[in-house]
Amino acid sequence: MNSKVKNFLLFLRNIVSVSFTWLMIIAVLVALISGSDSISVAAVYKLMLLCLLAGSIFTFIFGEGPLKSKSFMNKLTIFLLIFIPLEVLGFYWIGIFSGSGSPLQWFIFVGTIVITYIASLIIDRVVYEAKAREYTRMLQEYQAKRSADSE
Image (cartoon, rainbow, N blue to C red):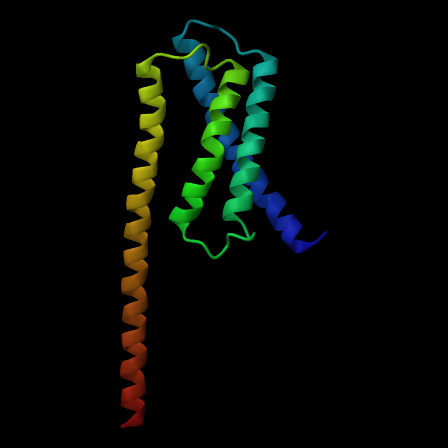
């Protein structure tokens, strides 16, 4: 098997397993809070398909594909622009969303996305600045060593 295909499938497996686990935990909590004592097998399969779709899109965007050279925030923005509409449709298909929803429900949904996007932006900036400081330090050490060697 081609190593790129193998890496894609390994990355996909990891993303799907983590996302499916978290989505199942959330689904169980929602079921418990709403007074239901079970989740249908069909809903579990639909959640798995939604996670497989999300994982495939995520792996294509963040993996070794054509967007490899883009920044993290560019990739995240592209992922969200593609996946959010699919997620909403998937939640209606699964039955998590029904009807048009209340303004409060949409505020919570959109607010969660915006807050996590802002948190990702802040984390990306902090990591980027830390890497920049590290690279600058390493460059200064290299330049100091070269100037000491040339004297």
